[in-house]
Amino acid sequence: MAEERIRVNAEKLKKLAARELESLGVPKNDAAITADVLVTADLRGVETHGIVSLVPFYIRGIQAGRINPKPDIKVSGTNLSTATVDGDKGLGYAVTYRAMKEAISRAQETGVGFVSVGNSTHFGPGFYYAMMALEYDMIGFTLTCSPVAEVVAPGSNTVSVGTNPLAIAAPANKKPPFVLDMATSVVATGKFRKAILEGKSVPEGWAIDKEGKPITDPSKRTLDNGGILPLGGTPELGEYKGFGLGVAVDILTSVLSGYAPAVLRRTKEVSHLAGALRISSFTAVDTFKNLMDEMIEAYDALPKLPGVKNIYIAGSYEAEVQKDREANGIPLLPQVIQTLKEAAGELGVEFDL
Image (tube, rainbow, N blue to C red; front, side, top):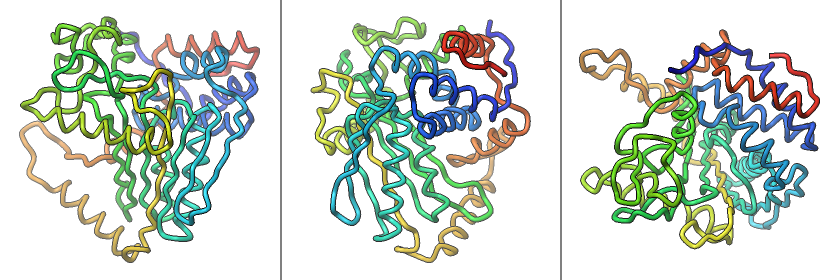
């Protein structure tokens, strides 16, 4: 049975995460960006991509040499609307933040900006970077390939594509923005880690073993024993669509940046695509935002099935969660807090949660 969660102040959590990263040589600004992305994920209820990943993936990744704490991030390209970024194996958070800033800058000048990123590492929740475009009255896009293949192709029992998430954010006026952040597989990999942490099984339809049979014990999901299913889950439910989306993301991230897609990859190469569209290049900003409000209100007003209180479009539920957690703290499992405390002691930084 899962332990009761403890509410933690978001600002304290950000400062602790930043201190731990800085102690490993990560520049102050890069550490602050990474901490903000991680904690924002927790604030919006995307716990699989939140602070739970700090120690096992990023602190240990830096210590093991998989992540470069002080990357020389290079931006190149003379085209007005496009650029390429070499992330120098730095924290994907700082690399993608830089790329999205570049995309926004180019969109301010030309109406559209897209930046291809190669030689990076995992960037956490895609919604964060897509939402960076909102304050500039733009629509933001981010896509990323996964470090390793974890999803089986329809009809196969061998992983050949990543969970390859994509995110789109669009501003509204009075309503919360539309924020879609989704894996192209049935479920994100982090859902399995979350289930293990909470001592829970996973539903049939998330993953299969090498015989094609459903896996419900999350600890039994391994890369040489079947894999996660594409979005849709079965041929009858359209898994070929999720598989196609996953391959499309590989094309727009890995192949476009000059790196091998998952099915050809021998090393853990991570690529991204960051984009921004300036709304005023297409229509008046007020017209767009007011129509967004009307659209969201129309969804809110739809007839509801018995027992259904709200119909949410992407981003609305997360906005509610964020409001609560900003006021009352982020609910963390005790073992997550303990991991952060142990890392603080190991790294010689103050622990004050």
